[in-house]
Image 1 (cartoon, one colour):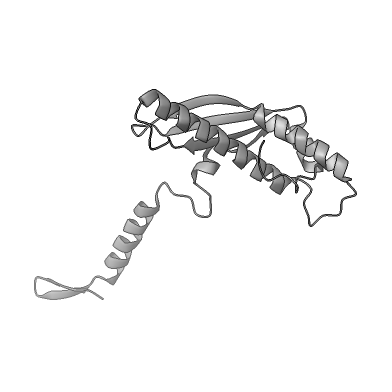
Image 2: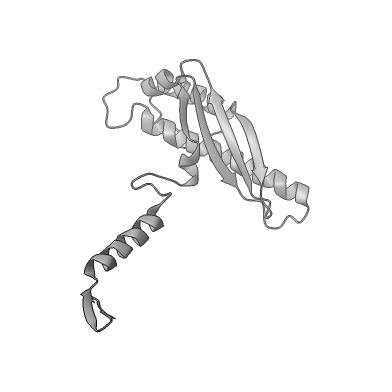
Amino acid sequence: MFIVSNNDKYTDCRGTGLFLFLLVFCLSCAGTSVGTDTGPDSKNTGWIDDSTFVVTTIGKPVRKYTDIKERRNSARRAAIINAQFRILKRFKKFSVGEGKKTAVSPEIRAGQAAKINSIIKSGKVQSEQFDKMDNCEIFYKVRFKNLKQFISEADLTSIDVIN
């Protein structure tokens, strides 16, 4: 409780202090969302439609390169590899997993893995942007007819890397 002297009269300022605290708290929270993922993976990541999946990722250049062209090419390659890995990771969460009963033979699983591998590798960089440190941010898009359904029915537990 705050006591303020006002012309020899004392005033209780508890309500004013609480109001100021709430005002500062609300202003400090402005622009943020509680309970949402705001990392680079969530910025522009997810399904656009049943046939299109997009992801935004960042790649860093190889440190030993000094030429700007080499640095940017290595950062772009790193961003593409990162995008492909993140897409695979998201697809694995969405697909038929180990906890679900499947009657998929190893041959079919291998075929599905090869198909998913080629779909992810056939993705395209839609845009790229470099910062002053030559880090590269890309927007990567994967398209395949009925991709969402294909992924949901596939068993991707055997895939860990994109070849």
